[in-house]
Image (cartoon, rainbow, N blue to C red; front, side, top):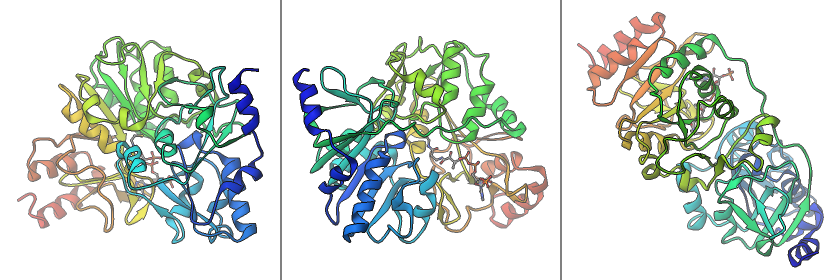
Length: 434
Ligand code: COA
């Protein structure tokens, strides 16, 4: 046994014992997605409730576990702050006891290093190597930034967490205590693609030249795009998220990363969520690297790739091109995430395009997602000054460099035909078109 293995043995404990490091008022910060440590978070919530501690928060981007701190009976003791809303934590984030943090994802590590101090930094990590290092796995976004100023660093070691290539590791000497918990990682099923999604995918496919570098965002639509570009060649991949479809594109040779100016031959991402076969693919795979989110989402790095095409989903867009991708009216639904980071990076890339996609309608076809004005209370994710292309199943609107009047006409042309007359009437009322 080497000295790191001895140190591991000394620091190994149970979740209940590790929870004793937490005090009332502590901020417990986790890295995103599959990096969330469910056994530690639940043990802390349980101790807080049993011992009457209060004011403890569980904070992270994108929760994937149905944790105790989302339940009303725990929230007086441990509540949650969502830096991106989704999955089992959505209800808690929308309730008065939960809270959320507006931020560009690229700014999240710097925020943890300055304004938002973690008292407890915790994460699920892959097993330790012989040199004493644990990989943050495909959850590389902000874990290291959180632990740098934390009073206590707790790890949940899980042999199902892939050990990934890239830059985000933590050393046993930096850790206060650790537990082992070999539960399966949260896996998202692959949903079958809808006809409208494939229509959108086809429109977008025509906008991607061979040898471009692409980014695929979160949600159903970017997956449909990936399925529609199997005939492309020589693509590069630089993204915040590495979805299962990117694996399919790599295995089919569509993405080979040969033409990238930086990180040649490698796909670059910061986190991943998908089926188990995706986690198996990422394990010890030198063709995919994971880096901290302030690195991957830096618009200046994105812009170094000529023909950078960012593809993200949105919830509604108004006639002058303000896009809301994170709330339904005033109700928080997801978050800004890296959408604006990639829109800006793609806008700065020579030959780049940023594409926002959406179905033309919601609520079984009764609501147009092309809106005269954003729904009252909706948050602007992409400003009218940053927006470039918007795509629905009815076509492509190109808004960059267009006047308000031209934008209104472009947007109406991609609305569902049954709403076009009403949208034209509203556009006239708003003096957008004569
Ligand atoms: N008004 C009311 N309801 C709406 C709506 C609107 N304008 N737009 C969508 N909805 C409903 C849908 O009908 C759907 O309801 P259902 O679940 O009952 O079917 C639900 O909201 C989700 O919409 P959908 O289009 O399926 O969302 P998605 O899962 O594909 O995710 C975003 C889309 C925009 C929420 C997601 O991409 C996101 O969070 N983006 C911001 C962050 C980001 O892009 N990061 C980039 C890098 S990862």
